[in-house]
Length: 132
Image 1 (tube, helix red, strand yellow):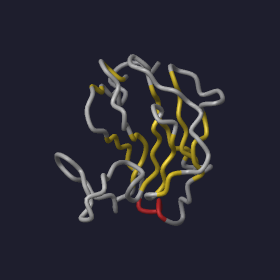
Image 2 (cartoon, one colour):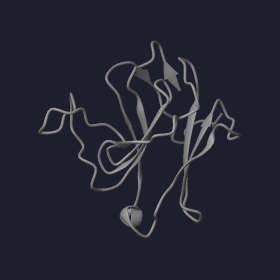
Image 3 (cartoon, helix red, strand yellow):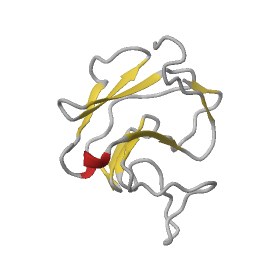
Image 4 (tube, helix red, strand yellow):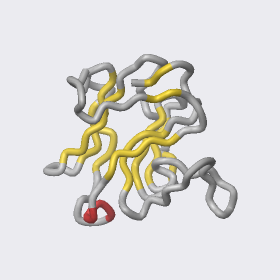
């Protein structure tokens, strides 16, 4: 659940073991911001309407708008190789499938839920309470 003011650059999704975890401000050696989807992974930004995969912004806009107080859910279907997203408990379009993931390729060593941003409040539920 997103709390308070919404971060302008929230990138939420999944990464592989190759993702470069950086404490504090995250920038590449070239000075570029590095978040979920900028490195080895798949990310979405529901504020700017963007999808990211391994540093490349998808040409098609991400059609879901997030706002403070929304409950955003993420799932990986390990049988179909899909990254799925829900908004306020709905997996129906335009939510649902975000990316097809090659489980035999980059994701063969596993995928991990990850969150990045510049500022804002975020609370996550990994099953401690009922999901929305």
